[in-house]
Structure formats: C-alpha cells, structure tokens
Length: 462
Image (cartoon, rainbow, N blue to C red):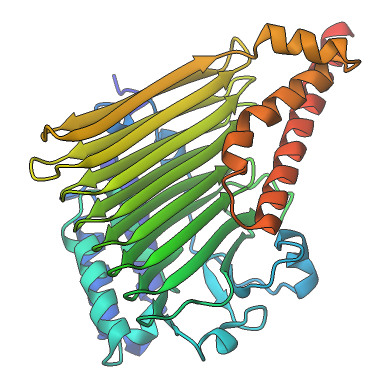
C-alpha cells in the first residue's frame, strides 16, 4: 500500500517536467542561449538523480510535501497592478530603493531599478548571461552548481523554472545609502501557480548593504500557489549585510525558501526572518564561513495558527578560527499549527577560538499545536565556546495573573504576553519603520487568532 505521506516520485517530477516542456515551447529562438542549457540540465536531473524529499529524509522527518506536490501547477501569468495595489506592503517612513516582482516577474514601472543602477549593478540574470561581465561570470557559477551539483530538489526545480532572476552587485568600498526593498507579490486566481523567485547578491570588499525581502499576496482567492525561492548571498572581505525576510503569504500558499550565504574574511551577515503566512512553510538557511574573523547572526520569529506548518532549518559551518555566530529563533503556535526547528552548528578541527551560540524558544498554546525542536552542535575543535538550548512551554500563569490583576481581560493579557515573548527579537530589528511594521503585523496576526477562537466558541455554544 502506498504511504499517503510519501510523494509518488515519478508522478510529482513528471508534472514539473511537462510544465518545463510547455515553457520551452514559448522560447522560440531563445533555446540556444546559455541560460536555457542550464535549465535543461536541472530539469533532466529532477526525478532521475534528485527526488523530492519524503519522511525517510532525516531533515524532512516532520514535514511532508505530499500536498504541496499534488496540484497541477502552471507557470505564472502576467498581472497588471498599480501603485495603489502595493502601498499596503511598503514601510511607512522608509526611504528605500524598490524592486517589485509580481508572480516572480520584474515590474519595471513600480520599481526604482534605474535609479539604483546608477550606484550598483542590478540586472536580470537571463539578460546578464548573454553578455560578458560580472553578471554572467557569477550567475553561471551558481546556476551551474544548482543545476548540476546540489541534491536539493527544490533548488533544482527553481533553477529549471525561474525566468526573471535578479543579480545585484555592490562594488568594493560602497556603503549603499538606502535599503533595497525586494517586494514579491503573488497573485493567483484561476489555477494553481508555481512562482520561482531567484536572487544572487554580491557585496564587494568593505561594502555595506541592507536587503529587505518581503512576500505578500494580492488576492482573497482560496487558490493554491507555490512560491519556491532561492537566494545566494556572497560577502567579500569586511562586507556587512543585514538581510530581512518577511513572509506573509496567503493561507493556501506553499512556501519553500533556500538561502545560502558565503562569507569571506572579516565579513558580517545578519539575518532577520519573520514568518506569519503560508499553509506550509519551509526555510533552509545556511552560512558557510570561508575565512577567519567572520560574524553570523540568525534571528527568527514564527507565528502559526489554524493548520499552518512552519519549518526552519539552519546551518552554520565554522571552518576557520576566530569566528562568531549567534542564533535565536522564537515562535508562537496555537490551534492545530505545527512548528519545526532544526539548527545545526558545525565547528571543524581548524576552527579554534570559535564562539557559537544557539537558542530556540517556542510557546505552544493549545492541545492541537505541536513543536519539534532539535538544536545540534558538531564540535571537532577544543578551544571553543559553544552552547545551544531549546524550550517549549506555555504562557507563564503568574505573569497572566499579574496582567489580569491590572484590569486586562484574559484575552487581552494573553495577547500582550505573546507579543512580549517575541519582543526580544523585534527589538533587534535596527530599522525603525521595519520594526514598527513587523510589530503591527504581529498585532494583526494575534487579532486574527482571537477572532478565529471567538467564532469557534460561538459555534460550540449554538
């Protein structure tokens, strides 16, 4: 008997292979350019060398992709949206360069790419592959790796299907004067859609860059869609990159994110992840420390209600001495939501004087909700300071009693305490408009939870 939690390998892969064939038919005379050759390499590996994960894969033990793979996806359609349609997704009071993607396709009218391109290189990957230069050299390196070498099926799929990837290069010594806001909007109404955002970002030596990635949906439709995103960041010597990723996809969205970071000597990379939306969310975030003096910070917030499933997998590879990493993820789960955290830190034999710290704390507020947390340390050096820990608990009853004694209802007190639990991370957000936006999104999320619970209570009393 077939396992309902195990995808049919041939059927799942064949759907995407057929989708790729349909995409090929639209290329006409463009089939001979180098990018299409890379895409073909990727799709040929799917289902042959690389399969979609099952529960037998240790890293996917608690996350099934069966429902994700069931729909017959189509490539995204072009959508005409206006400035007014995206206003709610912007950060009030934030002066930023804006790059807008709708269903994975770049929208020039809504973006400020031309202004940004006067300072740094911002180029469509497919166009850059047809010209000699930095875009072609760097993009080819990573695209070929994703197509030919990695065993991550979702990265391979993204490489095969992505049509409008973006390449960003910050020259040596440049401090970019404003954050770059990459706004991703999904708009799927008529049929299940697969969206394949792709980003390669290089920060030159002694440069400084702030990237803000946000993911939103522009429809109240119950249509299923699948956002499958891949990002590569490269930090050259002494580069500093702050990377914010805020995900608020639709309630029937599947969201798979793979972000890989290469850090050179004395670089600092800080990741701030906020996951609020999506039906099934999987984040793979890894940083490879390729020389001494690097610093890596991973911070994450996740809130799951109803039947949401949020899975965070992180990996920090300490391969050289005198490096630091700090990781803190906190989440709130209720109703029948499920959470997964698997954080792995590896300290190789030569990585003496490493400082590595990792924590994951979760509030589980209902009987139907659950959390699986697995912090891991693999240490092969002896002169290090490393620690990890995880807690899974409920709201402190003494704190709840104190709040109620100050005149708050139980619902109000619970909401305040949930918000306070996440404050340790929201306070780390350095940009005031971003922090304020995230805090408001959290308030709205908890209001949604309260309204859902009130509806259930009213139904149970009828």
